[in-house]
Length: 481
Ligand SMILES: [Zn+2]
Image (cartoon, rainbow, N blue to C red):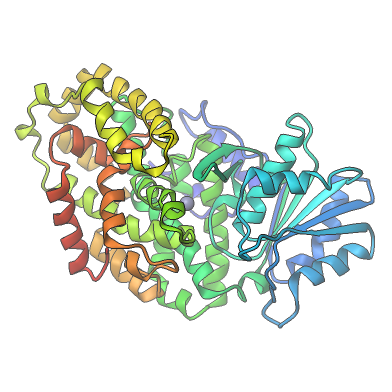
């Protein structure tokens, strides 16, 4: 039974939420989210000085931004507005990161450039979207993991859920890696600022939340099969109802409705907390994210940029929801030949190297993926009894998850109404069909985390023909390639 107090959770009341999570039965393994304050309101940037004083008695502020001009809904320049508020009370150094192509990437090299300005700073104020937030979290954490500099972030777009989690997605040697970092101390979401962000960035945040209908069930499935740990319903319970409402309000989101944007800000922040409570990204990152990660991994080779994270995740979310729909409605446990469900390392290693070997000359990507994939293969092989039990109680499993999934046609129709891109070919950097097919076919080989695709693979269902059938179903929903 879902605790009703969780379903209308307010992201700005974090102490109350931490307490409620601790009260849930079986929540001993869940962690607390240790941010100090989250401000979501109109005119939120007016409180940046007050936020600094809450964290530090010092006077020197390092303000970190990217090069892009950002204006709020009144047409005022946001970075300059934050700067002028800070300068009234503090000594401020404004450090603007830039790269030759105008796009700042979350790389350790850029983090080092930020760290080079830490001398004498009492508090860091990052102003920007996901990349600036990831860089500030990473730079402050790794400069001094035991006592990082106080960090405030002014979030300028509702683009991803990562402002309120304790990790950074970094581009390391061309591969996207989720690296443990830290929480922002105080997060400021000024609704006048995010309302003026490019529509595609806010649609990206809406898209990141499409994972709510696939990632938690992937997480649960892995736990049932002994290939995952620490599943708990509470992290997803705090966002599911609010995500449902966002889907219902998809057309209002497209119209830029202020109330819906406020709800998106709340739900995205809660989705970051969900990962914090779980102490892993599983509540918000399942099969849909891993497809997206593979596409990102090819960007360097294809000499193209990386798409808005959430929009790409949402297109992949349609594919994942079709896979879950297949599992729950067409999968027949009686047809599974258990003896054939356990490929050996000798069989799988060449598959992994074939999938990823072309990404770089030294096969670093393939080595990295194999070292993680073989752990999944080992746990799957060691938990045969759990798989047998799963097959014999498959109807009960279906009943467990029935309220945690949504029909693919419903998700697709909502995304159409929201004006979210529904095809890989219409993302901000169009992804060719060949790359998409490669990513979907091979995504289960990338990491240790179990998903519905692993189950379909081990039971002999997953192959190129099957992926083509799924892509045809996506096409029927005006989605997919
Ligand atoms: Zn995401």
